[in-house]
Image (cartoon, rainbow, N blue to C red; front, side, top):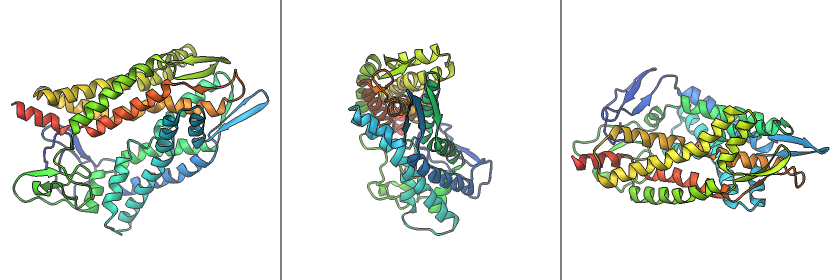
Length: 398
Protein backbone atom coordinates (compact mmCIF):
# COMPACT_ATOMS: atom_id res chain seq x y z
CA UNK A 1 0.00 0.00 0.00
CA UNK A 2 1.36 3.41 -1.00
CA UNK A 3 1.02 6.37 1.37
CA UNK A 4 -0.71 9.27 -0.36
CA UNK A 5 1.01 11.76 1.98
CA UNK A 6 4.68 10.80 1.63
CA UNK A 7 4.79 8.15 -1.12
CA UNK A 8 6.31 5.38 1.02
CA UNK A 9 5.27 1.84 0.10
CA UNK A 10 4.03 -0.28 3.04
CA UNK A 11 3.20 -3.97 3.27
CA UNK A 12 -0.02 -5.14 4.93
CA UNK A 13 -1.13 -8.73 5.56
CA UNK A 14 -4.19 -9.96 3.72
CA UNK A 15 -7.30 -10.93 5.63
CA UNK A 16 -6.84 -8.39 8.40
CA UNK A 17 -9.91 -8.35 10.58
CA UNK A 18 -11.83 -5.81 12.61
CA UNK A 19 -9.86 -3.37 14.70
CA UNK A 20 -6.91 -3.38 12.31
CA UNK A 21 -5.12 -0.06 11.75
CA UNK A 22 -2.14 0.37 9.45
CA UNK A 23 0.05 3.47 9.79
CA UNK A 24 2.70 4.56 7.32
CA UNK A 25 6.14 3.60 8.59
CA UNK A 26 7.65 6.85 7.31
CA UNK A 27 5.17 9.64 8.15
CA UNK A 28 2.69 7.97 10.52
CA UNK A 29 -0.38 8.67 8.37
CA UNK A 30 -3.19 6.12 8.77
CA UNK A 31 -3.38 4.05 5.58
CA UNK A 32 -6.26 1.82 6.63
CA UNK A 33 -8.53 1.51 9.64
CA UNK A 34 -11.02 -1.35 9.83
CA UNK A 35 -12.50 -0.77 13.30
CA UNK A 36 -16.30 -0.30 13.06
CA UNK A 37 -16.09 -0.40 9.25
CA UNK A 38 -17.82 -2.89 7.02
CA UNK A 39 -19.30 -3.23 3.57
CA UNK A 40 -22.79 -3.88 4.97
CA UNK A 41 -22.81 -0.79 7.20
CA UNK A 42 -21.43 1.46 4.46
CA UNK A 43 -23.99 0.14 1.95
CA UNK A 44 -26.86 0.71 4.39
CA UNK A 45 -25.76 4.26 5.19
CA UNK A 46 -25.00 5.23 1.58
CA UNK A 47 -28.26 3.89 0.17
CA UNK A 48 -30.32 5.48 2.96
CA UNK A 49 -28.56 8.82 2.42
CA UNK A 50 -29.28 8.63 -1.32
CA UNK A 51 -32.95 7.88 -0.75
CA UNK A 52 -33.32 10.72 1.79
CA UNK A 53 -31.63 13.22 -0.52
CA UNK A 54 -34.50 12.86 -3.02
CA UNK A 55 -37.29 14.21 -0.74
CA UNK A 56 -34.78 16.66 0.79
CA UNK A 57 -34.56 18.24 -2.67
CA UNK A 58 -38.25 17.96 -3.51
CA UNK A 59 -39.99 19.09 -0.32
CA UNK A 60 -39.79 22.48 1.48
CA UNK A 61 -37.01 23.03 4.01
CA UNK A 62 -38.36 25.91 6.11
CA UNK A 63 -41.37 28.20 6.32
CA UNK A 64 -41.45 31.67 7.83
CA UNK A 65 -44.57 33.61 8.85
CA UNK A 66 -44.88 37.42 8.94
CA UNK A 67 -47.47 40.09 8.09
CA UNK A 68 -50.19 37.47 7.63
CA UNK A 69 -48.18 35.73 4.89
CA UNK A 70 -45.65 32.92 4.64
CA UNK A 71 -42.57 32.07 2.59
CA UNK A 72 -41.12 28.62 1.93
CA UNK A 73 -37.67 27.54 0.80
CA UNK A 74 -36.49 24.52 -1.16
CA UNK A 75 -32.95 23.34 -1.73
CA UNK A 76 -33.00 24.59 -5.31
CA UNK A 77 -34.69 27.87 -4.32
CA UNK A 78 -31.52 28.88 -2.51
CA UNK A 79 -29.74 28.79 -5.87
CA UNK A 80 -32.64 30.60 -7.55
CA UNK A 81 -32.53 33.36 -4.96
CA UNK A 82 -28.80 33.84 -5.51
CA UNK A 83 -29.32 34.01 -9.27
CA UNK A 84 -32.11 36.56 -8.83
CA UNK A 85 -29.80 38.69 -6.67
CA UNK A 86 -27.20 38.64 -9.44
CA UNK A 87 -24.84 36.14 -7.83
CA UNK A 88 -24.45 33.42 -10.52
CA UNK A 89 -21.21 31.98 -9.05
CA UNK A 90 -22.93 31.30 -5.72
CA UNK A 91 -26.00 29.90 -7.48
CA UNK A 92 -23.81 27.49 -9.47
CA UNK A 93 -21.94 26.41 -6.32
CA UNK A 94 -25.23 25.67 -4.52
CA UNK A 95 -26.59 23.67 -7.48
CA UNK A 96 -23.44 21.58 -7.70
CA UNK A 97 -22.51 21.16 -4.02
CA UNK A 98 -26.02 20.70 -2.59
CA UNK A 99 -28.11 19.18 -5.37
CA UNK A 100 -26.05 17.41 -8.03
CA UNK A 101 -22.87 16.15 -6.36
CA UNK A 102 -24.48 14.54 -3.26
CA UNK A 103 -26.95 12.62 -5.43
CA UNK A 104 -24.22 11.47 -7.82
CA UNK A 105 -21.79 10.51 -5.02
CA UNK A 106 -24.24 8.45 -2.99
CA UNK A 107 -25.86 6.98 -6.09
CA UNK A 108 -22.46 5.73 -7.27
CA UNK A 109 -21.53 4.46 -3.81
CA UNK A 110 -24.82 2.58 -3.53
CA UNK A 111 -24.36 0.89 -6.91
CA UNK A 112 -20.70 -0.05 -6.32
CA UNK A 113 -21.22 -1.38 -2.80
CA UNK A 114 -24.39 -3.26 -3.78
CA UNK A 115 -22.66 -5.03 -6.67
CA UNK A 116 -19.76 -6.02 -4.43
CA UNK A 117 -22.17 -7.28 -1.79
CA UNK A 118 -24.01 -9.36 -4.39
CA UNK A 119 -20.70 -10.51 -5.90
CA UNK A 120 -21.53 -9.00 -9.30
CA UNK A 121 -18.22 -7.47 -10.42
CA UNK A 122 -18.06 -5.19 -13.45
CA UNK A 123 -15.11 -3.56 -15.26
CA UNK A 124 -16.47 -0.06 -14.54
CA UNK A 125 -16.66 -0.46 -10.74
CA UNK A 126 -13.19 0.98 -10.18
CA UNK A 127 -13.95 4.07 -12.24
CA UNK A 128 -17.29 4.58 -10.48
CA UNK A 129 -15.74 4.21 -7.00
CA UNK A 130 -12.99 6.67 -7.91
CA UNK A 131 -15.59 9.24 -9.01
CA UNK A 132 -17.52 8.74 -5.77
CA UNK A 133 -14.34 9.32 -3.75
CA UNK A 134 -13.40 12.42 -5.73
CA UNK A 135 -16.84 13.89 -5.01
CA UNK A 136 -16.49 13.33 -1.26
CA UNK A 137 -15.16 16.85 -0.61
CA UNK A 138 -17.59 18.52 -3.03
CA UNK A 139 -20.82 16.84 -1.90
CA UNK A 140 -21.79 19.15 0.98
CA UNK A 141 -25.08 17.95 2.41
CA UNK A 142 -23.47 17.75 5.86
CA UNK A 143 -22.11 21.30 5.55
CA UNK A 144 -25.54 22.60 4.57
CA UNK A 145 -27.01 20.81 7.56
CA UNK A 146 -24.93 23.02 9.88
CA UNK A 147 -25.86 26.06 7.80
CA UNK A 148 -29.52 25.17 8.27
CA UNK A 149 -29.03 25.06 12.06
CA UNK A 150 -27.45 28.54 12.00
CA UNK A 151 -30.23 29.88 9.76
CA UNK A 152 -32.99 28.49 11.96
CA UNK A 153 -31.41 29.89 15.14
CA UNK A 154 -31.02 33.34 13.62
CA UNK A 155 -34.57 33.40 12.28
CA UNK A 156 -36.17 32.04 15.44
CA UNK A 157 -34.81 35.04 17.36
CA UNK A 158 -36.72 37.46 15.10
CA UNK A 159 -39.59 35.81 13.26
CA UNK A 160 -41.85 32.77 13.40
CA UNK A 161 -40.21 29.88 11.57
CA UNK A 162 -40.78 26.12 11.25
CA UNK A 163 -38.86 23.21 9.79
CA UNK A 164 -40.59 21.28 7.02
CA UNK A 165 -40.33 17.73 5.68
CA UNK A 166 -37.37 18.53 3.42
CA UNK A 167 -35.36 19.74 6.42
CA UNK A 168 -35.98 16.55 8.37
CA UNK A 169 -34.94 14.47 5.35
CA UNK A 170 -31.84 16.65 5.03
CA UNK A 171 -31.02 16.10 8.71
CA UNK A 172 -31.18 12.35 8.12
CA UNK A 173 -29.15 12.53 4.89
CA UNK A 174 -26.53 14.83 6.40
CA UNK A 175 -26.11 12.57 9.42
CA UNK A 176 -25.86 9.47 7.24
CA UNK A 177 -23.23 11.24 5.15
CA UNK A 178 -21.00 11.29 8.21
CA UNK A 179 -21.82 7.67 9.08
CA UNK A 180 -21.06 6.56 5.53
CA UNK A 181 -17.62 8.05 5.75
CA UNK A 182 -17.05 6.52 9.19
CA UNK A 183 -18.05 3.00 8.07
CA UNK A 184 -16.50 2.97 4.58
CA UNK A 185 -13.22 1.04 4.39
CA UNK A 186 -11.85 2.37 1.10
CA UNK A 187 -8.79 0.12 1.09
CA UNK A 188 -10.98 -2.98 1.50
CA UNK A 189 -13.32 -1.81 -1.28
CA UNK A 190 -10.39 -1.32 -3.64
CA UNK A 191 -9.13 -4.80 -2.73
CA UNK A 192 -12.57 -6.23 -3.47
CA UNK A 193 -12.67 -4.46 -6.85
CA UNK A 194 -9.17 -5.62 -7.84
CA UNK A 195 -6.66 -7.06 -5.35
CA UNK A 196 -3.23 -5.44 -5.23
CA UNK A 197 -0.23 -7.56 -6.14
CA UNK A 198 3.44 -7.13 -5.36
CA UNK A 199 5.03 -5.32 -8.32
CA UNK A 200 8.15 -6.77 -9.95
CA UNK A 201 11.50 -5.74 -8.44
CA UNK A 202 12.56 -2.20 -9.26
CA UNK A 203 11.28 1.38 -8.93
CA UNK A 204 7.56 1.81 -8.34
CA UNK A 205 4.92 4.53 -8.36
CA UNK A 206 1.40 4.73 -6.98
CA UNK A 207 -1.86 5.49 -8.78
CA UNK A 208 -3.31 8.76 -7.52
CA UNK A 209 -6.88 7.49 -7.89
CA UNK A 210 -6.74 4.20 -5.97
CA UNK A 211 -3.23 3.90 -4.51
CA UNK A 212 -2.33 0.80 -6.55
CA UNK A 213 1.45 0.28 -6.56
CA UNK A 214 2.78 -0.18 -10.10
CA UNK A 215 6.19 -0.37 -11.77
CA UNK A 216 7.42 3.00 -13.08
CA UNK A 217 7.06 1.84 -16.68
CA UNK A 218 3.29 2.22 -16.23
CA UNK A 219 3.57 6.02 -15.96
CA UNK A 220 1.37 7.69 -18.56
CA UNK A 221 -0.76 4.56 -18.95
CA UNK A 222 -4.26 3.88 -17.62
CA UNK A 223 -4.49 2.36 -14.15
CA UNK A 224 -5.86 -1.21 -14.46
CA UNK A 225 -8.00 -0.74 -11.34
CA UNK A 226 -9.55 2.78 -11.48
CA UNK A 227 -8.87 3.83 -15.11
CA UNK A 228 -7.08 7.11 -14.28
CA UNK A 229 -3.91 8.16 -16.10
CA UNK A 230 -0.97 7.18 -13.86
CA UNK A 231 1.63 9.80 -12.92
CA UNK A 232 4.49 9.53 -10.45
CA UNK A 233 3.47 12.95 -9.10
CA UNK A 234 0.60 15.31 -9.92
CA UNK A 235 1.57 17.25 -13.05
CA UNK A 236 2.46 20.91 -12.32
CA UNK A 237 1.21 20.42 -8.76
CA UNK A 238 3.34 23.17 -7.18
CA UNK A 239 2.62 25.80 -9.85
CA UNK A 240 -1.11 25.16 -9.82
CA UNK A 241 -1.32 25.18 -6.04
CA UNK A 242 0.75 28.39 -5.84
CA UNK A 243 -1.39 30.19 -8.45
CA UNK A 244 -4.68 29.11 -6.87
CA UNK A 245 -3.51 29.99 -3.35
CA UNK A 246 -2.36 33.44 -4.47
CA UNK A 247 -5.67 34.06 -6.23
CA UNK A 248 -7.54 32.96 -3.11
CA UNK A 249 -5.42 35.30 -0.94
CA UNK A 250 -6.16 38.30 -3.19
CA UNK A 251 -9.91 37.62 -3.14
CA UNK A 252 -9.91 36.97 0.60
CA UNK A 253 -9.30 40.68 1.25
CA UNK A 254 -12.52 42.01 -0.39
CA UNK A 255 -14.41 38.97 0.92
CA UNK A 256 -13.80 40.23 4.47
CA UNK A 257 -13.86 44.01 3.90
CA UNK A 258 -17.10 44.35 1.94
CA UNK A 259 -20.62 43.34 3.09
CA UNK A 260 -21.51 39.73 2.46
CA UNK A 261 -25.28 40.09 3.03
CA UNK A 262 -28.13 42.33 4.14
CA UNK A 263 -30.16 40.57 6.83
CA UNK A 264 -33.26 41.77 8.72
CA UNK A 265 -31.95 41.07 12.21
CA UNK A 266 -34.25 42.76 14.73
CA UNK A 267 -36.58 43.66 11.83
CA UNK A 268 -34.02 46.19 10.60
CA UNK A 269 -32.17 45.65 7.31
CA UNK A 270 -28.47 45.61 8.17
CA UNK A 271 -25.44 44.99 5.98
CA UNK A 272 -22.96 42.53 7.43
CA UNK A 273 -19.38 41.60 6.79
CA UNK A 274 -18.20 38.12 7.79
CA UNK A 275 -16.97 39.25 11.21
CA UNK A 276 -20.04 41.45 11.81
CA UNK A 277 -22.21 38.38 11.33
CA UNK A 278 -20.23 36.63 14.05
CA UNK A 279 -20.65 39.64 16.35
CA UNK A 280 -24.40 39.62 15.73
CA UNK A 281 -24.72 35.99 16.77
CA UNK A 282 -22.76 36.62 19.95
CA UNK A 283 -24.90 39.72 20.71
CA UNK A 284 -28.00 37.54 20.31
CA UNK A 285 -26.58 35.22 23.00
CA UNK A 286 -25.85 32.52 20.41
CA UNK A 287 -22.25 32.09 21.48
CA UNK A 288 -21.88 28.54 20.19
CA UNK A 289 -23.17 29.42 16.73
CA UNK A 290 -21.05 32.56 16.73
CA UNK A 291 -17.91 30.50 17.40
CA UNK A 292 -18.97 28.01 14.73
CA UNK A 293 -19.40 30.71 12.08
CA UNK A 294 -16.14 32.43 13.14
CA UNK A 295 -14.27 29.15 12.81
CA UNK A 296 -15.81 28.23 9.45
CA UNK A 297 -15.83 31.67 7.84
CA UNK A 298 -12.67 33.30 9.18
CA UNK A 299 -10.35 30.88 10.97
CA UNK A 300 -10.51 27.98 8.48
CA UNK A 301 -9.86 30.12 5.35
CA UNK A 302 -6.92 31.76 7.11
CA UNK A 303 -5.48 28.38 8.16
CA UNK A 304 -5.93 27.06 4.61
CA UNK A 305 -4.13 29.97 2.97
CA UNK A 306 -1.26 29.97 5.46
CA UNK A 307 -0.93 26.17 5.43
CA UNK A 308 -0.94 25.90 1.64
CA UNK A 309 1.56 28.73 1.30
CA UNK A 310 3.87 27.01 3.80
CA UNK A 311 3.72 23.70 1.92
CA UNK A 312 4.35 25.34 -1.48
CA UNK A 313 7.26 27.45 -0.19
CA UNK A 314 8.72 24.39 1.54
CA UNK A 315 8.87 22.51 -1.77
CA UNK A 316 10.30 25.49 -3.67
CA UNK A 317 13.01 25.98 -1.02
CA UNK A 318 13.70 22.22 -0.84
CA UNK A 319 13.37 22.27 2.91
CA UNK A 320 14.09 19.08 4.84
CA UNK A 321 12.72 20.38 8.15
CA UNK A 322 9.51 19.25 9.91
CA UNK A 323 8.37 17.01 7.05
CA UNK A 324 5.85 15.11 9.20
CA UNK A 325 4.38 18.36 10.54
CA UNK A 326 3.97 19.73 7.01
CA UNK A 327 2.28 16.53 5.89
CA UNK A 328 -0.20 16.77 8.75
CA UNK A 329 -0.82 20.47 8.04
CA UNK A 330 -1.61 19.60 4.44
CA UNK A 331 -3.94 16.81 5.57
CA UNK A 332 -5.74 19.26 7.88
CA UNK A 333 -6.05 21.88 5.13
CA UNK A 334 -7.40 19.32 2.68
CA UNK A 335 -9.92 18.06 5.23
CA UNK A 336 -11.38 21.29 6.61
CA UNK A 337 -11.61 23.37 3.45
CA UNK A 338 -15.21 22.50 2.56
CA UNK A 339 -16.62 23.69 5.90
CA UNK A 340 -16.00 27.33 4.96
CA UNK A 341 -19.07 27.12 2.72
CA UNK A 342 -21.33 27.48 5.78
CA UNK A 343 -21.65 31.27 5.41
CA UNK A 344 -22.71 31.26 1.72
CA UNK A 345 -25.16 28.44 2.48
CA UNK A 346 -26.63 30.39 5.43
CA UNK A 347 -27.23 33.43 3.23
CA UNK A 348 -28.66 31.25 0.49
CA UNK A 349 -31.08 29.71 3.00
CA UNK A 350 -32.05 33.16 4.34
CA UNK A 351 -32.90 34.95 1.11
CA UNK A 352 -35.91 32.98 -0.27
CA UNK A 353 -37.80 32.89 3.06
CA UNK A 354 -37.27 36.54 3.96
CA UNK A 355 -38.76 38.17 0.87
CA UNK A 356 -41.70 40.06 2.38
CA UNK A 357 -41.09 43.78 1.88
CA UNK A 358 -38.29 46.36 1.95
CA UNK A 359 -37.80 45.88 5.71
CA UNK A 360 -38.31 42.14 6.17
CA UNK A 361 -36.03 40.93 3.41
CA UNK A 362 -32.60 39.45 2.93
CA UNK A 363 -30.19 39.99 0.06
CA UNK A 364 -26.77 38.72 -0.89
CA UNK A 365 -24.08 41.36 -1.25
CA UNK A 366 -20.99 41.36 -3.53
CA UNK A 367 -18.57 39.87 -0.99
CA UNK A 368 -20.47 36.57 -0.99
CA UNK A 369 -19.19 35.79 -4.48
CA UNK A 370 -15.62 36.64 -3.53
CA UNK A 371 -15.92 34.48 -0.40
CA UNK A 372 -17.39 31.53 -2.33
CA UNK A 373 -14.64 31.73 -4.94
CA UNK A 374 -12.00 31.83 -2.17
CA UNK A 375 -13.41 28.59 -0.73
CA UNK A 376 -13.42 26.89 -4.14
CA UNK A 377 -9.93 28.14 -5.07
CA UNK A 378 -8.38 26.94 -1.82
CA UNK A 379 -10.04 23.55 -2.18
CA UNK A 380 -8.73 23.28 -5.74
CA UNK A 381 -5.29 24.37 -4.54
CA UNK A 382 -5.24 21.61 -1.94
CA UNK A 383 -6.38 19.09 -4.55
CA UNK A 384 -3.74 20.28 -7.04
CA UNK A 385 -0.85 20.10 -4.61
CA UNK A 386 0.94 16.77 -4.19
CA UNK A 387 2.11 16.36 -0.56
CA UNK A 388 4.62 13.73 -1.64
CA UNK A 389 6.62 16.60 -3.14
CA UNK A 390 7.36 17.77 0.41
CA UNK A 391 9.23 14.52 1.04
CA UNK A 392 10.85 14.60 -2.41
CA UNK A 393 12.19 18.08 -1.62
CA UNK A 394 13.43 16.90 1.77
CA UNK A 395 15.29 13.97 0.22
CA UNK A 396 16.79 16.26 -2.43
CA UNK A 397 18.00 18.65 0.27
CA UNK A 398 19.68 15.91 2.25
